[in-house]
Structure formats: C-alpha cells, structure tokens
Image (cartoon, rainbow, N blue to C red; front, side):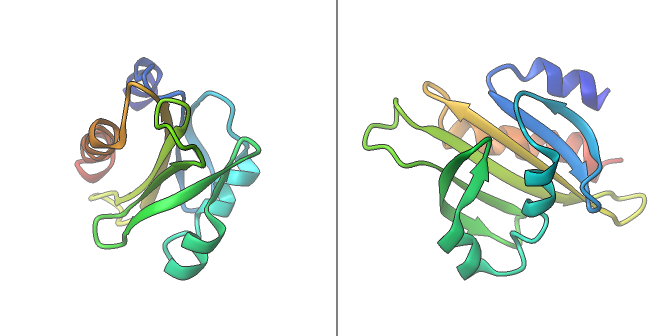
Length: 132
C-alpha cells in the first residue's frame, strides 16, 4: 500500500522511504542509496545539518527549517526566485508497532511549495508509519 501511495505522489519529483539501516522500503525518482544513508544522521547535529545542507542527486539544498521534535527538516536549492528552485523535506516517524524510526525524503518544484508538501509528507508518514 505504501509503495503504491508513494508512486501516486507525482507532485513530489523524488521520493523515498527507508529504515534506520538505510534499507529502501519504497522509492521513485533519482536518489542514491548512499545519499539516503547519509541522511540518517541529519537529526543528530543541528548546526552540522544547517552548515552542510542536504546533497540530493548531486545538488546541494540549503536547510531552512529544523524541527527535531516534529521529525522535520526542510529547505530548498539556492535560487533567488522560488519558481526556479526545488524544495526538499526530510521526515522521520516511529513505527507504532516496533518503535523503529522510518525516514522519508521528498523533493518538489513550483507550483508545489513547502506549505503544501510538508503537511502532505507528515500525513503520509502518519498513515504509513506511525499508524502501522
């Protein structure tokens, strides 16, 4: 069900869900497993994550927001005009059955902005991770 739901989220240009070992549970678009494993430490050190940003498919994305309690980090590529840039959101949630952290990353382009994409990813994580 999660794989199908992720596939149908076509407004997210890249999307992946993976576990705390970096094992991909579902993925669409160009993302490297090596990069996914690198994201696993993003919540550990706020300053480092802000400083380094996120490298996704060979591009660097600036981190604009970091909400550890909510399990959310998001931002966008360096661009003056939001219509030219690409946003990203990285999220984590605990599986209610096992207590295991599950992670997701998405990217999105205009007209989709973080105000729409972030709550949608939170809903996705609630539906397919927290409630599982």
